Image (cartoon, rainbow, N blue to C red):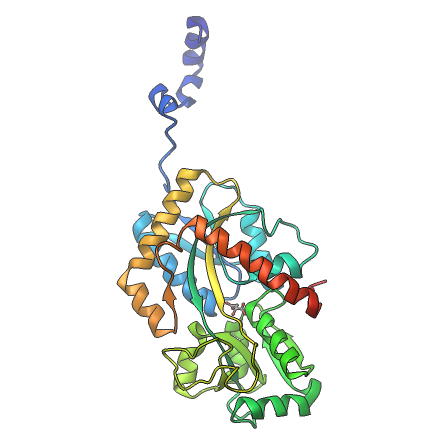
Length: 331
Ligand code: MLT
């Protein structure tokens, strides 16, 4: 820079805005984070994604040295929360916890105001959670076979709560309806937290939901549980039969969760977030609480952007033909 220009800049104060020469030479990036981070949960407070997200936020905040504030941006089957993050400034201060919806939304939604595949940088997987089919306590069925018969007999008088097209409860409900050959009336909510309140109140018949929310209600006997759509029984709820054992073979869905930043977030910022995620998943408090609600943190190798990207890409490919065959589109 010529001396005269430098002098002119210094005189105007603008030189103060330029990064120090040493920092520019080493390609140094500003410290991160220097303020609170927003963790967007695309479903209602109190539900299973929110339960996992708040545990994660609290624990990651300790590692990051800044608050991690949960924001429930709900609606449209989790797509509004995803859109909020895909279109946020890619600076690491707005991140998303989302689930299997990231695998089905790219096929289920043919029109979206964000890119459901290229709008994000995956930061790492978080956990895999089994699902359970739970019903109001006084539903006149005491096994999966009874439930199937009841659903068939009731037709559209039978109702099924879910968290909207793109949610895990909706995917599970659609697979159940197809396996049973029934057409229940679907009642969508902004998350299965509020849906569960309707099951508890006896106003809705059935909900397919994650153990992170259902475990305590199953143990307390406040809902009736019929099966888990998992390959194996759930270690913490061993009395619940799998759907295959209960007479609906091949009907399986397990919910995975991952953490995302908007696409274009700088690599050092992403690395800091992934490091904080990995540290959180090693915390005994998380391991213990996850175990109590029927899940476990993923391995440290899976809490990486590479493993997350591989898993996510494979999941989109896995669900695409299923959704196309069933024709369960959002539009
Ligand atoms: C779902 O059905 O996808 C979830 O249970 C949504 C939620 O966390 O409420």
